[in-house]
Amino acid sequence: MPNAKKVMTAFSIMACWHSKHVSADFHQCVIYDSDDPNAKLIGIEYIASEKVDSHLIWFVIIRVDFQSQLFDSLPEDEKKYWHSHKYETKDTMPATDLAEQPAMLELQKTYGKTIHTWAIDIHPELPMGPPSLMMAYTGDGQMDSQMLNVRDKKYGMDTQKKRELRKQYLPPYEKHRGADAWEQSGKAVAFKAVEEDLN
Figure 1 (cartoon, rainbow, N blue to C red):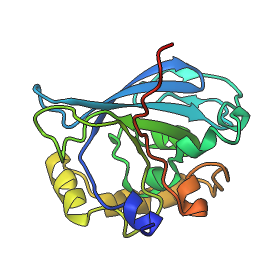
Figure 2: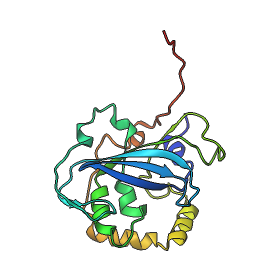
Figure 3: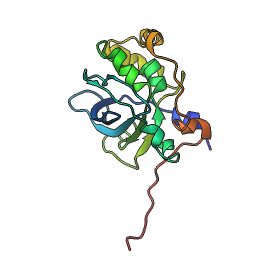
């Protein structure tokens, strides 16, 4: 089998999330390939908190108070489908200046389950083939630096400045051992179509 890290980080795509706050510890998101009016719907992501205290909701300034352990309560076998947001919040995730600290403080200790139904980079015309379980970047050198530069230029961002800013307020954090399972197992989860009798 090819090196799992190379498989998991072999390609990068631009994606834009639209998120709905379902409950105090759970978001559901639709993912598009851009923020253009003709953007294509390419997937979904569920975001579950680990353990969270009083804070502000991601990009929406609404005060909520809760204690939850949603990700911690998942069966161990389920956790292999989930990725952490630790690296993204520390280094690469965009946020408007207004929402910067509340958004990153909330999302740092969350976990995502992301399914892409349209491999837009392979089949740009139609969503063909089985869905894919997507993972988040977990370290430097995995993300396409040219794509990151394009993103920064398009949205007037400076990722390096964001990294330095976040070092000042994000607390040290150890992600849950069950997330980012591919890093420990060396194996990627793939969905395959299996025909079964209808009887």
